Amino acid sequence: MKKSLIFRILAVSLLLGSCASPKKFVYLQDMVPGESYPVDIKHEALIMCDDRLKITVNSKNPELAIPFNIHEGSFRVSADGNISTYSNGSSVREEGYRVDVDGYIDFPILGKLHVAGLTVNQAIDLIGTKIVEGNYMKDPLVSIEFLNFKYTVMGAVTSTGNYSVTGDRVTIFEALARAGGLTQKARLDRITVFREVGDSREMYVADIRSKEIFNSPCYYLQQNDIVYAEPKYLKKDAEDRGWQIGTTVLSIVTAVCSVLWAINSFN
Image 1 (cartoon, rainbow, N blue to C red):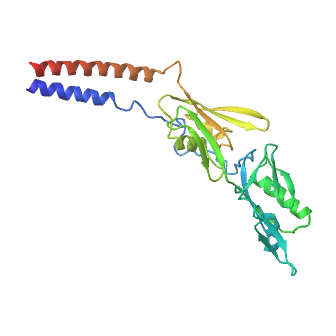
Image 2 (image 1 turned 45 degrees about the vertical axis):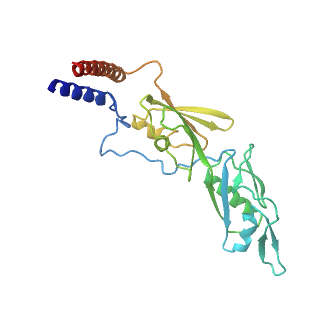
Image 3 (image 1 turned 90 degrees about the horizontal axis):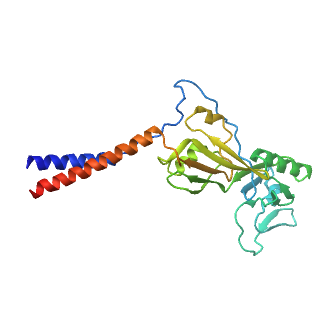
């Protein structure tokens, strides 16, 4: 009876051991406690084609700003000079201003404006300058927000897919975390970011084990970036091989113990 109990305990222990997590990733391995590292507090995402922007114009005289905030419907001026809006009966349009394939938005009063490739602050300056130059108002206050800042995560992550966020400051670590983190098959030294720059695409390869990631142009993502966590294809490091061998041995030992336990129970 005692031998039977021992065999059972040994078999269960080995089986549980074979299911344990093999390792945990260590990011930023070369960072030193107490040492400071630079932060790009002025990072701004670039406006891209197919972006959707929320643009608001304000002024000390609110009535002057109304025509620039007409994205749906129309406006009219009454006999006493007051400006009001009304619906033109058309179907509801999507929120915000869409940047077309040529990089333009169709903005009220000002017409076509090329904003692709500009930062938000540069686009704000452009609209504000156009309003002043047209003598529409002297003190425009323009604000712009992304409505559909998105990126894609693929490869050796828990959950691949397209992700949308509010704001425009997303780091590569935040993108991987939103995708459920890396799997055990991911290469920490080969996290690749594909980015649209003008009429071309660029590729950046980041090693997230190193503090140098902070200086990488892909540390902060841009609109429509594709993050690809490269898996380990042909080569496995020593730890992976060791874990694979250890798991195989434990499985064999577990099977043998199960057979011995069965034989002992039968006898």
